[in-house]
Image 1 (cartoon, rainbow, N blue to C red):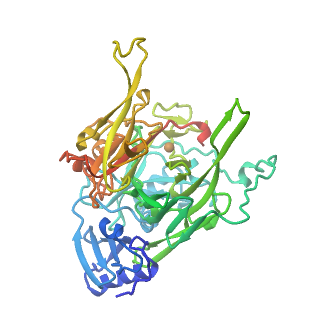
Image 2 (cartoon, rainbow, N blue to C red; image 1 turned 45 degrees about the vertical axis):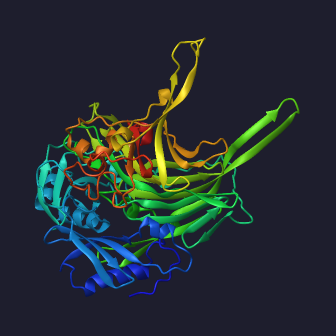
Image 3 (cartoon, rainbow, N blue to C red; image 1 turned 90 degrees about the vertical axis):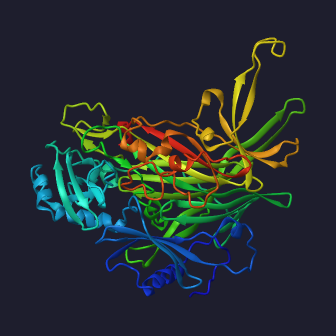
Length: 598
Ligand code: CU
């Protein structure tokens, strides 16, 4: 038992609390002999407890734990009460695999290098120095073979020297199928030798020469410090109030986002986080056709966050938050400066010049930026939440890092990708889909969701010039009506209204979800990826609030056969009008790689 030091039920678990939760599990002697911890996070209390909490109320602290029993290949979920010192629940994971852990990355690489068959495949390609080889443990996905085992279809690259960028030198057509529970190579699939592109792809100043020197300094000074205040994980900035969280699966979590309006704290968003992401590749070549990276559910993208103490990516007065994770043995690990908080000038918020009075008024825009960057082997994802002074909340993902590469014989032009250099290095065409779970509580939990678009008025006496158009709102009453795609040509948005609270015009108060550019997937509906990532088939989904429904592709998409998550939950077509609703928005980026990306 541990006397809690925290002062809010949503404060993330501390190192002490994680150690206590793991110790409670050990005391109960239910841990398998050879186990591996995947994650330990705060078991968030029910919404009514959080919303009813007052400073000084007793706080019940509990941990949600996922771990692997390697010899049996079974994964377990536990809820441990840190407050009571008890295990509240312990159950085996029924379908799918927990995410691949960072330790498994290393161990998988070692297992490959220990395999004579793997070494033989490399030898055929003239690669004998194993120290220069890197192995990325891509998940095996689910293709009706090797079922029931925790597997990677690992891909390899080779460096020309220990500091070389290996992604310039893909070892095409060698796939190591590795059993991650036994840490042994099941088989090597070799689809034929393609020469390894040898042209270096290094990007450090020592390789590319002096960086630009013709820019004068542009400094950002906040001599009196930032305008926000921080108390634990609670943040206040201008009229905004919110709490920060961080989980290994989701990375950044925003809790209880509210706006202060003439003394009234008006709730907007109870919880917002990345619920899942997937990167489907369009190349049918054997090295690439099963590349479908669910970087949240397969790789715990939050656990791959950069420690920004190694160099911050933001300018100005920065404040950081650490993330507390666990290693495979359940020992707490603090990732220093995983979250960056700062303010940015954002140009003009509003301007008007009154030509009659000759007076101009302008207001500058300042935004609060909450960000975190994760490195998933070659790729970098920057997750940015912005809060603006006009009440806007914005989410942006920045895609950067290094593209996933392959090799074609020199002189070949790939149909399903673009060449990056003349040495046969190429990058397959792919897409990146991110799903955001947005538990909106606009002025309270009971909300309605409307589809809004603009249409032309019919000809008639009301429309004498045949040029009239108007915005049409349609209440979305059930889940399946709310499965929609963007339509920028008719200005489609979705409005989340509270019918019980009126604004100054007498209409229900609302927030609207404004989509920007988006794409849809290309895979056939019967393809494995379409079943496993059903959430990418629509941009908007709406569900009634259910705290257990957190991840768009289900709790364990790694090697899951599919159908879980949003498609399964919404099959019941539950009512969504006048209830506590959650919006799920799928945001897709299309990536036909350019040589300039390289
Ligand atoms: Cu990309």
